[in-house]
Image (cartoon, rainbow, N blue to C red; front, side):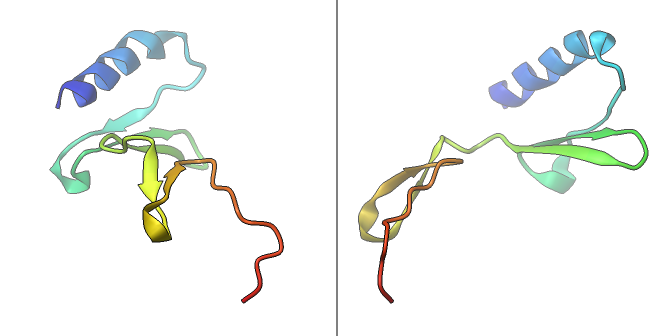
Length: 76
């Protein structure tokens, strides 16, 4: 909850300088997520607030979220 409040406070303070004002959705429908919906056609920024920056691969390997590395020339 503290991170949710931090992000929502940041958005409230910063959005005055943004070219388009978002509709902010942060309620129980989306659990621990915040959605910022901008303009028409609609564009949404969706962020999961409980991600810690890593996910687990096979073999208990840690992979940074947003930067997976594939092994070159892996045969199936």
